[in-house]
Image 1 (cartoon, rainbow, N blue to C red):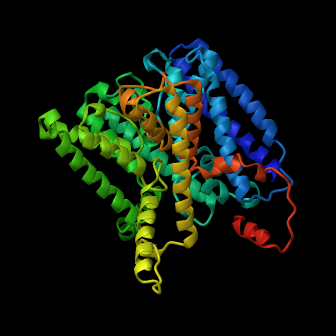
Image 2: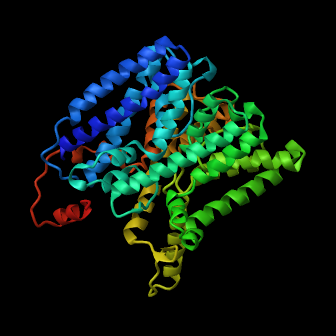
Image 3: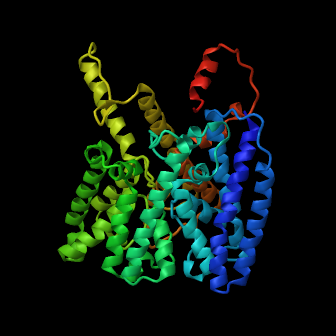
Length: 499
């Protein structure tokens, strides 16, 4: 394990977080929130100094392999969460550190689950920081790092692979840094466009920025207790709903459109499946809840917003789906599992993984019927490697194991079955609301400290696609092991090294 490179990268991550906290400082100045200003400035100063000391000296050993990539990604997200919770506690906005940590992890992982009973008592600076964590976490702090820091040794794809959601990570440009810049530029442009559209509709600037951050990162933190539904404005809801769907699409598709590869973009199998699922779900929910709302327009309005919010893992709400029929509730749970596209800011298992799992299952059935036939899984007309199929299956198994264990632990809080199950599912898939007491009008305030810690782990595991956290907590990666120069393991590690 190359500890020097890990320390170096963590130093830069702390400096990026310190820079990001300057925005809440500006907000505190504007609204005259002295306590919040000093709380953020203290955290900024400490983060900057410690981070500067950590990356001041460039490492002599620049070798960077997959295990370092997974370890540094997991450690970076843990560190930014631990540090990001400090201003809430110092200012008194959230006195309990565990509650502040839950809120911060929920923000960075773009989950949007809150353990606060009243967000309107928070300062403007605190509300802004909650929403800003969504935007930072949506695309990833290490992806942002790649846009500003030429990574030592050039081994940067490991960071991109470990942090980006989905089973496949493609380069948009030959150099990873250029890819990261393109991703963040598109991310920023879409965020700004949404914010402008909300302002045109008459939404206050502060609200428009915060809700745009939440939509872009598919997070879901609102600035009022009533959330998006509190505005009772069809225009606002439609703008946010459309952008929730857009941010759930692989950003590689937007790059294809920008480079005028229209046919290739439209033929993308995952995107088409994602849009079909959205459309079918809206129709199915609308037919099921029509009797509640009584008009086609109102029914489509509520159904479209809720489906877009859940499948994109944003979690904004304009309707209490706890009051919907059982069929619609079941569809919502299925959408929680499904999630958005790989390479988007959305959560869930990802449409690509589900497609690969389904296709691999059918190929196994076909192979059983015709043992001598050669069956392969294909996406967009191209063969999916056996390694990718194996990784998808492993991901599914690990996720089910973590969900099962988490449900057992959370059940000690003695909530009803729907709360125990959906609390874990919604945190693991970074959705936000669940059913029952944690529905669109509820929160996680009544959960025990143990349950909150479990859900914090689930949120991080879901956002980081499980493997980085498991690798980080694996004792085997931290020891120094001797390998023969020409061993099979040595050759595998060499292949993993980025060029």
